[in-house]
Image 1 (cartoon, rainbow, N blue to C red):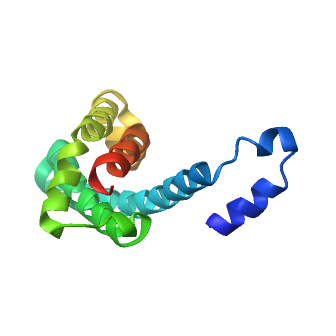
Image 2 (image 1 turned 180 degrees about the horizontal axis):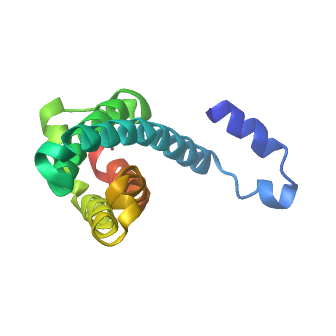
Length: 151
């Protein structure tokens, strides 16, 4: 992906090309990988909500689904997106990932809770609320993960 972005940058006009630095390409590559991992997390999140909503309700299922999705995304980000920043015991990094992403959790599940509470379509089809929540927390989670968890 990095090589593709570098080739694409070489085709930009000179005035735009000067803003495309190797560090920015690296960040963009990581962000795209983080987003791909997030898409996998979205699938786990949604599947968990749908499988648990009858037994735990939408709010309980949402909390459990977040923990499942966060664990899956932490593991995939550790193995792929930030593979060079995977130092220390895995359980400590997992706990740090969950801790630093609490603000992202508030954005993610706050959006989810608001939507399933006030939008009938989201209560009937929670996939929309799950997706909106994931997008709401994604940018903050990327920056926190990059700066604190996988440095």
